[in-house]
Structures are given as structure tokens and as C-alpha cells.
Length: 341
Image (tube, rainbow, N blue to C red; front, side):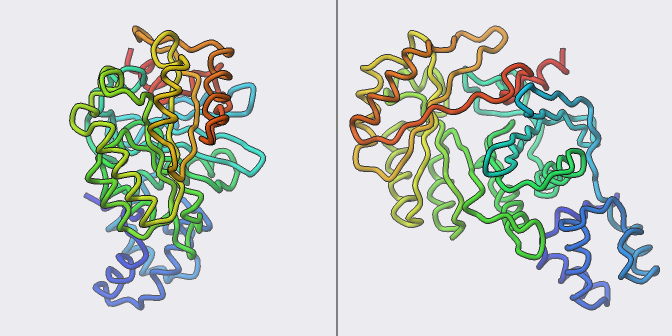
């Protein structure tokens, strides 16, 4: 079987070309064609010899995804369901902000975490995405939407730190100045809280943003919402986050989805403020999305604002996430769930 050329970072490509008795600078040319020019075939790489193009075409594929379905919201948010060419499908979301275009990418086909509020729950885990399949989501959206993406969030289907090696390799490809050249500070990794991998990420010397799906400062309540808390409780998680902040000097973002009559009262806000006191952090309050057969409902706007103000008054920077794509079910997993019905 042909190998996916996008699974190779620049160093891999250089070594590969040396093994093929080709000059290593040819690897840089190929890398530029893929990530700067976003071409669809080796035949378009006109500064390579015909023999080299044919040689590459025999060994490698571009693995360009097909669009199964695309939805566009009134606010311009676009949600893609991609055929990843093995009978499986993943979701990717394009969002427009004042600062540019952001993309939410998936890291796995399905998810193991079982978070009770997430539409990915109930979608069986199939496999990890390769680094090339992660990066292809960016390239496929740029090709279709004719935009240049400036920000990446690993917040789609799957737990990024459960696919650690491929996610890190994808980030290094995305970050490479000779390719997509998206700065690490414009890349955010969202995790449900796999503590050992947070420590490992801190040592990678990548200045990306770490986002923690927290959703409660109470262990019993969080375990009910997120089974991962049974493996790594809140105290262990916060300890790892403090270590990450100390090593990277980067602010940690805590995601908190507000569910009506569950984790949205002022007592919950008080526990959260005490937990995060003194940390270099930000709280991103998320109006929860109702999912099919889900037990959680969206909190009231009044409670969300009260929750935010309580945190801000106690020195915890908190903002309410702007709701994008609500009219097209843009939350993680919703489109794929519909396609599986």
C-alpha cells in the first residue's frame, strides 16, 4: 500500500530523500508544495524532475479527504464531515473570528473518554488518526473554503493526549516555518485530564495552550460527568496543571460547561474559585449543548452571567464562550452521530 506523504515531517522527508539517493533540498521543495501551495498531486510539483514525480507517485498518496457533508451556520461557521478514505468519518469545524479563521480538528475516530455531556459519547472508538490525517483536516478546509487558517484547536472528536505521539508530530508539522507556519501560541490542546501526558507535554518545549475540560470543582460531581476523574482526580489534575504553568510559563485555560441544576450555582462557583486561586489561568464558560438522550440541559443565561461575575469578582478571569454554529449542531460529534443513524 502507498504511504501517506503527509505523515512525514520535514526531517523525515529529508531522511527519506537521502535514502532514495535524492538531494535533501528536494524534501523542502515537496514540503512547500504540500503545505504552502496545498497541491493535490505530485504532477503539480513542477520544479521536480518527471522521474522523481513518478517515483513519488508510485510510493506515496496525498490522502486527500472527501467531503461527505458540509453545513454552514448563519454566523458563517462551517462544519465538515470528512470521509477519511477507510470507511470512517470524522468532523472538523471552521470558525471565523475578528482575529482570523480558527479550525477545530479531531484526533481520533471515536472517543474512549465517555464524557456524559459530549456528543462523541456513544460513538465507538475505532482508531487514532495519524499525524497526516490530523494535518489534512486543515489542508482540506483551506482548499474548500479558500481561506488561510491561523488558529488550531484540538477539540474535535477524540482525546488528543490519548493519541499523544501523532498529535505532537502533527503540531510540529503545523508549526514548521517552511510549511503551514502556524505559531505554537495559536495552537490549543484540549484534554479531559490524562495527568501523565500533561507532565509529558510540559517537557516538549512547545508553547501551545493547554485547555483542561474541568466542568466541576467537586470530585463526585466531576466523576459523574467525566469518568476520567476516577483515574485522575481533581487534585492530581490541578497539581499537573501547576507543573505545566511552572515549566512553560503559559496560562492554562479551564473549560467549564454549565449544566442547569447541576454545576451552575454559586456554590459551584465558590468551589471553583477556591480551587483555582492564585493560578495563572483563565476559565472559559461554555453554555452546554443538549445532545440526543443526554441528561444535561443548558443553564440559564442569568445563571451563566452570575457564575462569570462571581469568578471575576474573586480574581479568576472568566469569559463566556461565544456560541458559534448552534443552528447546525456544530458541537463535537453531533454531525457524525446523525450520519451513523
